[in-house]
Length: 319
Image (cartoon, rainbow, N blue to C red; front, side):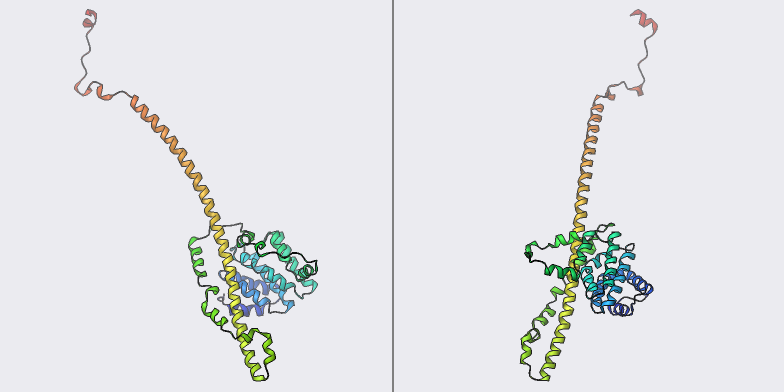
C-alpha cells in the first residue's frame, strides 16, 4: 500500500468517483494511514470546497465509509471529522439538487441511528444548511449573542462526541503535543512579519481606481496572488492549530477526569487501608494482653536437673 502524503491524497481524491469500489478502496487506504487523520480531514475539507457541487456528495460518502469502518481500529477519524462536519455539510448542500440534499441528510440520519454522533451534534450540523441560515436571516431580528454568552473552550470540549471506549490519555504524548503547540502557526514570527509587510494596496479595493496602465495592474495582480497564497496557507495552518488545541484541550479534560477518578479510588483505598490498620491494631493489643497473662516460665522448676522425688506412702500417712 502506497505511503501517505498530501499530494498523494489529493491525487487519489481527484480520481475518486461515485462507485462503491472507488469509495471503499480509498477508504481502506485512509484507514490504513489513520495516524495522519488530522491532515487527512483538513485536506478532505479543502478539496471538497474545490470540486463541483454534484461531486461533493461523493466526498460525504467517503467520509461516511471512513468514519464507520475505522471505529474498530480507533476513534481518530470519528473525532477529527467531527471538527469539520458542520462546514462540510454546508458545502455539500450549497447549490445542490434536492436529491443530493436528501442523500446528505440520510447520511446524518444513519450517524444518528447508529449513535456514531450524538443527536445534539447532528442537530447542530443540520443548522448549517444554507436554507436554514437564510430562514434565520429572514426571521425577525433578535438580539445578537454577546461575546460573553458564546460557548467557552471548556463547553466546546464537553460538547464533543464522547468516546465510549475511553482510555487513560498517555502523559508522554500529552506533554509532547503541548510542546508541539509552542511551535505552531500563531508562534511563527517569520510568517507574521511577512503578512505585516504586505503592501496596503493588496487589501485596499480603493487603490484600483489609481491604476492607469496594464503593467501596474499586472504587478498588483501578482502581489495580490502572492498575498492570497501566503494568507491561505497561514489560515490553513491556523485552522489546523485551532483544531489541534481543541483536541489537546479534550485530552487534557479527559486526563484530568481520569486523575480525579484515580484520586477518588485512591482515597477509597486509603480509607480501606486505615480500617484494616485499625483492625490489626486491635488484634495486636489483644495479643499483647494475652501474652502478659501467660505464666512466667522462668519461675517453673528446672526440669533439666530432674524433678524432686515424690513422697512415699509411709511419709504421706505419717503426716
